Length: 556
Length: 84
Image (cartoon, rainbow over all chains, first blue to last red):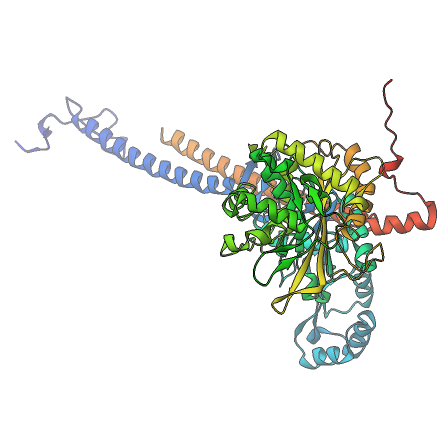
């Protein structure tokens, strides 16, 4: 008969309720129609379910995306909405968490002159509040009839006065200002940050600070203030052009103080003069003079040479080159033993010691102490030392501190290795939890002999004025002539003193340098490291040593 | 079956919307709390900065000179007892 899709309609019989039902349900013997319908219905249900399932999934994803905005942060153990959190620039702190630089919320004042109720009155009141602004400034603003900036970072007093004006033209915009509560004290070290300018630590550590991370330095506000105060007094007293000082731990390399004068107030960027900007400790280099002689002694001690038992004739002077003849006018003795070459700071003795060693050994030694390589200190810009192109022809000059221009911080770093038991150190300015690897470059014996020698220099030699009552001091003075128009000047000098305490087992180093001092404590005609930098060293150490020794600053 | 499906889907959508509304509400609360926190932080910062300004060494020196006249402790003032 008639067949379609395998259904035999011959077998069709009406259901019992056929007459009462509007729908006609056919039944066959094998329920083929029923099954087909059921399958159809199941297929439809599956599609519907799939559709709703996909709808739910999409909706869940949508919800999930919204939930993702809320993030669980491990650090604070709290829910924070990331999008709207305002990150302030991180603070710069000293080792005792005293604030050196911080950011505070302020307001910038704008005026929308079109919305003013009474322009003349507003103009008058604004010129009364901001007395430092000229009347022509307000004339120009109000003539333009524009939305104009009146002043950035207005003070709370100015804000209160503005609120009492009550004119809708006054518009305040939220702003942020970098402030330096310690004014000049750290200026040459941390620099400054304004909308237009950024320098020194503020610039070098900008990434961390911009992320809102606080920066803890190794410096100490109290020590920095004492050093700055004493250095400033001496700068005035000696009528020097510039001065600098550093206090450092010779074992850990932590810098407790770094002062460079003249300095500036970072809160008033417009008043900064170019000559005050540089941190002379790291961004300038000098021919150090006799402070470099101590490296000759270390060279002799380290090689265990017999030279340390020799005597040196100095009365006739020494012809270095055809044009250069040196004399030790300041020494009365004609013959000096090895120690006295350094105690009395003899240039001739130093050259003669170098002669018996040779320039190659000297160069290798300077390389060993790190004076020939670039020094990298986190947060600081350090200039590279200026080495002679031909070392051999300059080696005799180098033996008494000429022909080689060093940054003070690199001299201090190298000197630390001589006195701390022979370990090479890396100066630290930014607090660091990672302990430094100790690399030994000298024997402990050499270091011990150097400490005895520099103590002798302070007790009996050129560094007598560096003595501090109640403390064993060791150190070396330095005086060098400045180069002026291609020649060494007889008047313009660099005087310095590098000293450590306690001398029997040095832990702290202080370096003081004056650029072109014209007077000295002894009222002597000659300004030297011994009568300028050494007494200033003594004044500084006298005051800082009780702080350093009681607060356990010797710990790494 | 269809009714059950429809019920579950509707229930799920309602739950989702409720969660979303709850999150929006919580977000708003968190934002407000954060705002309050940052305002308080800002005030604390200002106070700390004020303290730093008013306790900077130059000011303390001035106060000492005018009122207390304390002398600094020097190395020579420290007594180191020696054991017999």
